[in-house]
Amino acid sequence: MHRWFWTIGIAIFFLLVMVGVYLFVPKATVVVSVKMDEQTIDSQVIGRIDAPVVDFGAGIIPAKAVSSTQEVSASYDATGSKLVSNQRAHGTVTIYNEYSSSPQPLVATTRFLTSDGKLFRLASGVTVPGTSMVNGQAKNGEVEAEITADSSGDDYNIGPATFNIPGFKSSGIKYNKIYAKSVVAMTGGGNGSSESKVIADSDIASAKSKILTALNNKLEEDMKKNGTDDAVILDGALNEGDVAYKLSNSAGDVANSFQITASAEAKAILVSQKDLNAAILELLKKTSGAKNIDSSSLKTDFSRADSDFVSGTVNIKFHAVGKINPDFTADFIKKAILGKDEDQIKTYLSGLSNIEKVEVEYWPPFLSGRIPFLGSQVKVAIDGI
Image (cartoon, rainbow, N blue to C red; front, side, top):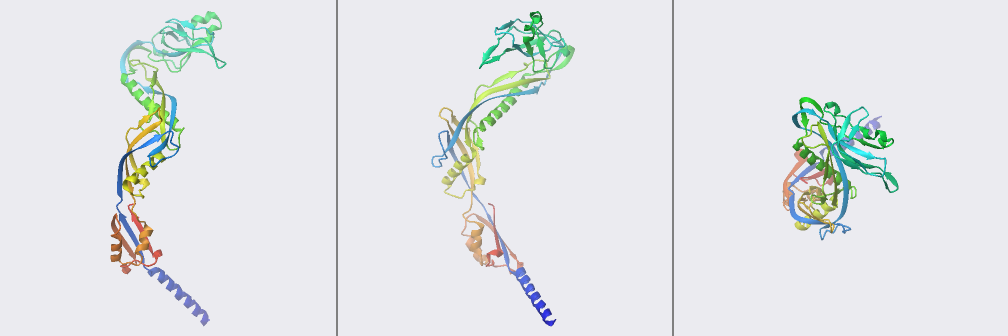
């Protein structure tokens, strides 16, 4: 029994010694604050469709020429107003000819009738093309035209509808083969004197501006699909042809809203954002002579690109700023200061550039004055990178 107590006592003693050693082995945490220098550059990178890879020496990156044709439609509210009296509804229809390959002329005031008896008349004379064969398939003739209600009243502000031509009713099959359809509501009908919404010039100007932005976004989105995942189209690298606008109404029309469609064909020169950043970073390194510029700190501003769509080149001028990492790491400093006192540490660190401040925290606090010799008991962090 005596021997058993003696064994337990020795074990407890060594355990306490080990705990004491762990608790009182000195530790140090060193935080080095650095100020990173910046390098700026104003230069240019050339994108070329015939460049297979990035040429850092020449500042050339691969590019790709693409094109797209897109159409965008949207509806906008009318914001104008005016006093209207006995207004007749009006709108646009598409007249179809499924009857014959011969064109069908229609004079002004030709009647168009809905299934529920709403009568409209053709505003101006038109000729509906005849049927034709396209790639072995029969194609109906069609033409767009304006129609106006035969009477005033807001009950003529009907939604999309199908119209027959009463004048063809005695012509047999022709009555059902030449007809018209509308895809937007008729507008402008009213009785008596009342204030109604009117499409203002500013409404159309605003709609064109908004629809143009949407069209450009759709064109860019479609063209980027033909490039890399990080493809970009810089300002000046997109050449948009004439934009065609189509309006369901005109300025001054009585209507709560109107529809606008914009279409255009565009071409662009794509470049990879990754390639562009890599070329700019390399130019920064050449200018500064530093090899350790922090790529995550890169900030760029681009001037309008100068594109040549015939030769397939884009001249990309830019202003760039990047931070230069110091020439040392936390592990490098840690190995150099093991076992040194504060004066020695100060002398050593004074020989390193970009250091603004050094803070040392010891544990236990009363053991301050010297960095431990064991690397496992020292932590070094660099603040500012």
